[in-house]
Length: 413
Image 1 (tube, rainbow, N blue to C red):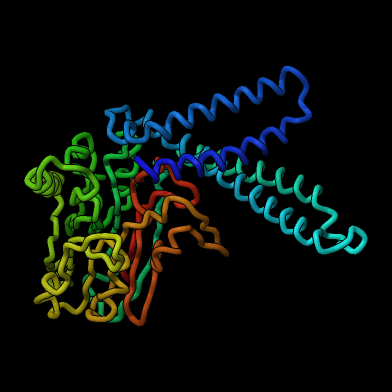
Image 2: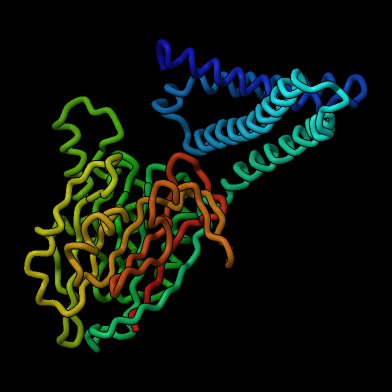
């Protein structure tokens, strides 16, 4: 961060800090000496540490730190920032309310001022307490979310297709997506998820992209773990947007090219059949269906597209039933359901459900839904289905709140 952008960032951060400190000082106002001074001092220490992290972001992004330490730093930084932003928003709104009342008061006498205008102090006190409670809850929730990053959950669905070949009725498919091995720091925890997959005894395993964060060597410690994934009809995979190395600086174009080449070799070492804009026939008892795999194709301008579905599909019309593996779910809306209406089921990932949200029987919400129309779970348009896996791993925020890491079990009936 340099120049005007840096100055603006600091000014915004200082404004947020002003409101957060005002609220905290209000919360401890009734404490007796020396507890009030100790509380304010502790707050000051936490804030100084946070500001030091802010000024050292470039270092934390590039330094060769222990992943566990890096995760703690990220969670502390994000948690404190979010909680202070929430507190600042409430107090800023209250200041706006009081300013509006003041301006109204310039045009009314005290006797004629509406009653609601005269009751400002009680509202300000309520908003301050609520902001502190809400902000504190968010901080605690973000910290708690670290405990969920390896809390794998099975999502089981059954799908019916009238033209599914009889040999595949009852076929069990396990889908995983977005492993992001560069974020892992616990081999044993990751192995537990693999054990859960194997316990399902799937007929077919499909991985829908983002094996790494940026570099192929991030898989070094996990090849022995994921190579244990086996299924009678095979394990197939595709590339996701992070697999191309687009989000890291390379010393040369050739270095980036060699990284992608090495990553493709990792898929081979795992025993996974990587589909690169192509299709294969899945065979059982003399019958077949088509499995199509494309390189990353995005319907969003924010991500690069590398794949070509027309090339991948060419010759697949012969199969009575077709499954498409496409990493980014926006591809389903931008092309698949319009130009390839005989693709029955598309499997995607990419969104992670933003690793934050609410999923209860009467409410399904995540901030990512304002960016992606299809962001988690099953979607249908006509006779075509899309399933968006919530991701096996994590990226950025080393945790999950409400949206847990997913292993999808799909049974065709």
